[in-house]
Image (cartoon, rainbow, N blue to C red):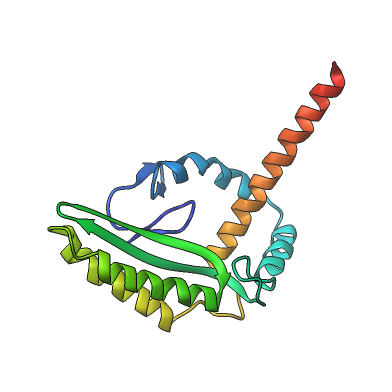
Length: 174
């Protein structure tokens, strides 16, 4: 199963490809330029930020870490329309389990009502959520997916800082 080069979500069908990279949707494809910049971040700076995020407080509930990426899965259907998605969240294990259980329940209630995809995708999404509850990321080491998110976020912060610095210099040049 393919994974999005930007957000790490699973791609069951479709997606957007660019060279060796594959993205789950157009938004991730647009943000893909950050991947090139992210690869240039020094490893010591990256390790410092990754440890800070991994051992920090949960951004959802404010509880103690470790923090990692927890992905819940959902599906809903109506007659001939079926929509499914992966919902990666950076949070603590407790918040990740709540999201996965919520995804399993909502998919179990709302997923079956479309033909033919609802009948096929619903059990997959429910099982993925329940399997995720039983096998969370290793709490002692940040996952590769968390490292990718922190790396891209750090690259975005660098781009924004450079943009603000350029605007400040333009304002002072007048």
